Structure formats: structure tokens, C-alpha cells
Image 1 (spheres, one colour):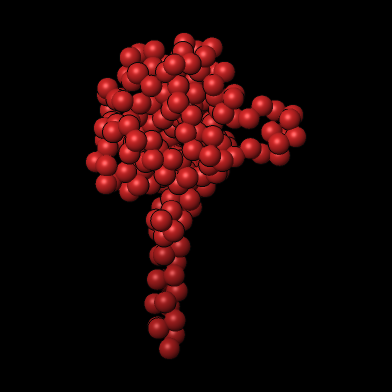
Image 2: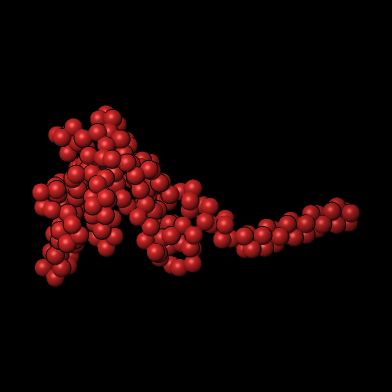
Length: 211
């Protein structure tokens, strides 16, 4: 009995030592490991000529600027943006609707009114936006779209848009914008980056089951 107990104690001690070594290795090499994890998650399609650049809602501080830059670089002749469901501050008139804010940003960054198209009605999610874009594609016959969005958002965007636009055989190019707080090489150093990554993983899993 004593020999049996000693054998189990040695095994437990060995597991504890191995666990400590793995934790130490993980800590020492956390930067390349976590950077690699983020880089594996983020979709980064090549920037190519397209029929339109799509601005998704929820990121007026970055997405319209990225779309305007792509437009100025001649990537596409049209920028489409969505009629995002207003929040409480917008409904009270405290802040302008996101669609209006997006329009103003585009105008001030070199995109003429004639190159903008508003689509959808009160869209509230990436899924809603994919369906609004699908309707626009069906009407216009667009064959290629490019979607700039936040890095961790790219995988969910790629999946839902590919699913919704499968019948139209539209080429979808999703490119990460790269906000400072979501950079693949430092996302774990701040609360916003960690929250953004974990939330997108949860949302991606939810989308795969729900849609």
C-alpha cells in the first residue's frame, strides 16, 4: 500500500512540475504565441479591384476612413453603407445617426455623393448587413466587393457574407483595418483588445449555430 501511495505521489509531483514548466514556457513565449493566435484568426484577403467598398455599421471611427482611402486609391467606383438602427442618443437627437455621420466622413475624405449608396433599413447586426448587401448585389449584378473592418471581426464577416452571397457567386474580399487597440501583435496588452477578441470568438460560434 505504501509503495502504491508513493508511486501516485511521484506521478502527481511530476504532473505539477510539468504544469509549472508549461506555464513558464507559455509566459516566456507569450508574445509570439498570442500574436500567432491572432494572426491565424484574422482574415486578410488581397486588396483587388472591386465593384464596391462596403462599410459595415458599428465602427464610424475607423471603417468610413478606411473605405474612403480605398476609394481614393481607385479600388472601387462605389462605396455602400448601411442604414444602422439608431441608438438611444441618436433617437433623442443628441448625436447624428450613424448613416449621416458616415456620409459626412466620406464627403470630407474625398468620396463624392454620387459615389455613395445607402442600403438596408434599421440594420442591427452583421447578419442584417449581409442580407442588405445581398439584395443590393441581386439588383446591381456586382461581382466583387471589398469589406474593410476591424481585425477580429474579419472571420465572422467572411463566413456570413460568403454564406449569404453564395448564390450570386460574388467574390468577397475582407481586409483588416488594424486599429491600434486591435493590433495582432499587442492585443493582449490591454483590456479592449482582449475583450474584442473574446467577444468575436463567442459571436462567431453563435453565428455558426444560428445562421
